[in-house]
Length: 54
Image 1 (cartoon, helix red, strand yellow):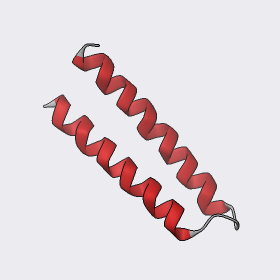
Image 2 (tube, helix red, strand yellow):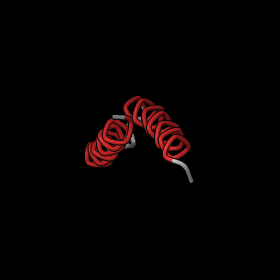
Image 3 (spheres, helix red, strand yellow):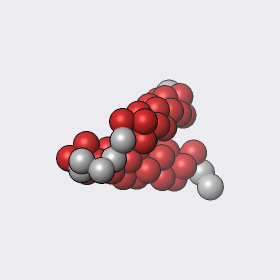
């Protein structure tokens, strides 16, 4: 897998997590811990994308 295709996959996962976080925030049955964990993973992906892109 090339670096560029890896970055594209990370961006896809980042967007998917963003959508999941938005949906979870609107859902009353999802606890704050789950949302927090998703946000941490999203941040980790963003940091890896930034690291690989520069």
